[in-house]
Amino acid sequence: MTNGCIFCKIVTGDIPAERVYENEKVYAFLDIRPINRGHALVIHKHHHADIFDTPEEDLKDLMAAAKHLAPVLVKTTKADGLNIGMNNRGAAGQVVMHAHLHVIPRFVNDGLRHWPGRQYTPEELKLDADAIRKALK
Ligand code: 5GP
Ligand code: ZN
Image (cartoon, rainbow, N blue to C red; front, side, top):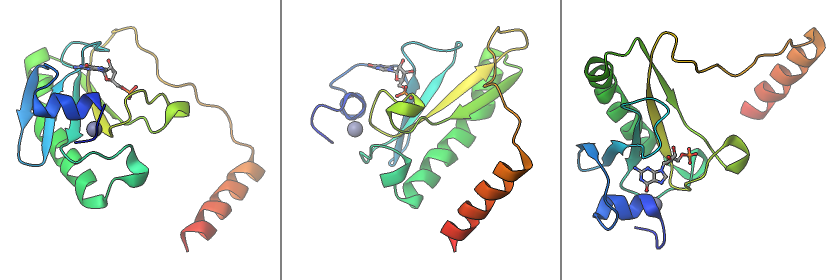
């Protein structure tokens, strides 16, 4: 529990939420401002701000819960597909600084648009791949 964190307060019950799933590690509840109906948030009971400070084990717990929820959300909402997303830091759209996965039912013709892609130049493509490979060594 981290003071002032609204998602920690949801886990403890200090802030109400529509819980849909819980185990000893994770907690999942419906997003109060859903992209589509059934939009769930999966959080770890350990407070971590984002992917950078979340241990791998805890990330596995989050993804395992998303895997558990995914077919159930699709079935109950009669969705045609599902997005799983994670915003990390403000520049990426993160507003609540308690790491979370968005699990979002999607429907054919739901009006949402995917991020626009742009063309890589061959030089940029090679430069970026080389830099990432080097940093991973
Ligand atoms: P972020 O932009 O940080 O990835 O997403 C935070 C999400 O949390 C938003 O989609 C927002 O609607 C949701 N949210 C924020 N406050 C609350 C709350 O008090 N209760 C619930 N259920 N969802 C919240
Ligand atoms: Zn928290």
